[in-house]
Length: 138
Ligand SMILES: [Zn+2]
Ligand SMILES: [Zn+2]
Figure 1 (cartoon, rainbow, N blue to C red):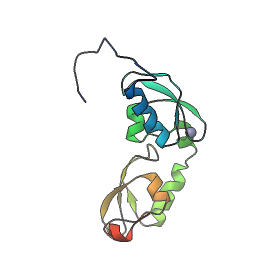
Figure 2 (cartoon, rainbow, N blue to C red; figure 1 turned 135 degrees about the vertical axis):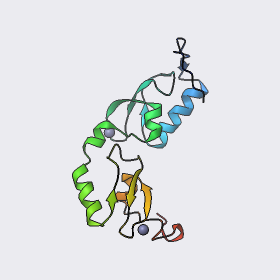
Figure 3 (cartoon, rainbow, N blue to C red; figure 1 turned 90 degrees about the vertical axis):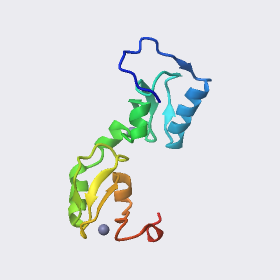
């Protein structure tokens, strides 16, 4: 990892047989996504990928690793329904929904603060303080 304030004019393009490309491809494959683009440049370069629901989308490796998920799948998530489920548990949500794997800040009914993503929330994962991890295995 490196950061530079100057604009990078020379971008290295990794072919599909390079280890960098294969490493990126493996990360997508782990989530049952397919990398369609046949080269890899930087973590910010948009790539064409197929999500686990066969949507063809453009996403950068960085966005993928941050958990943004597939934009088409995300649209099928009813954010209002999610918020009403949070209310039903008497939890509070302090962030806006950005993607199923992005952690959001919650407060449980016993006023414990913790982070959880949408996917874990839907799986009915509990507050870690109310339910210490030994009792909270998936
Ligand atoms: Zn999708
Ligand atoms: Zn709690």
